[in-house]
Amino acid sequence: MNIFPKSYYTFKIIGEETETLERLKRRTELSESLTSKITDKSFRGIIKDNSFRIISSEIGKGAFCVLTGEIVNKDGQVEVEINKAFRILLSILLCFPFIGFITLFFSNKQEFSIISILAVILQLLMIRYVFIELAFRRFSKSSLTKLSDVLDIDYIEKN
Image 1 (cartoon, rainbow, N blue to C red):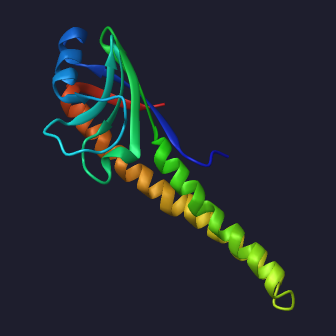
Image 2 (cartoon, rainbow, N blue to C red):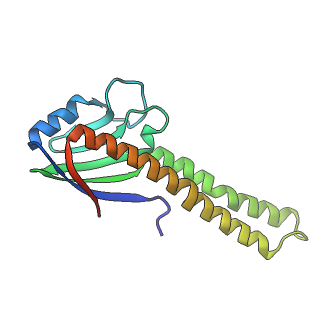
Image 3 (tube, rainbow, N blue to C red):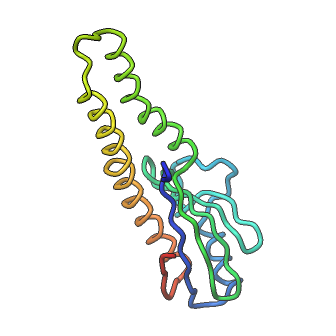
């Protein structure tokens, strides 16, 4: 089981590879750090040769997903994953049910029961499969839509 979701996509561009990469370079603010910043460009990140590692430039939610990919001829592939900074924050959030469980175990041994273990497991599942998964799906979809507009993608397919 992966704690943090990833998605892999393949796509086909309409125009030429060099033309498409130039358009992506024009619409991307070059930056080594993948953090949100107010800009008039669509993306922030790194573009080298025919590969890229970018985030959406939307403040607040754009940096949640990192798009890493490459374009070879008219075919491309992209991997969508949660940004490292958000993975750290979400890992801390996933630790809270364990901290509560340990606190309950050592503070009130009379009130400790098997239901406490079930509550911790349910909390972990809710955080992972509801909170993290829904946020990832929503933000990755908006980032992929923006990437599709910039690159003039003919079709995109999930692997």
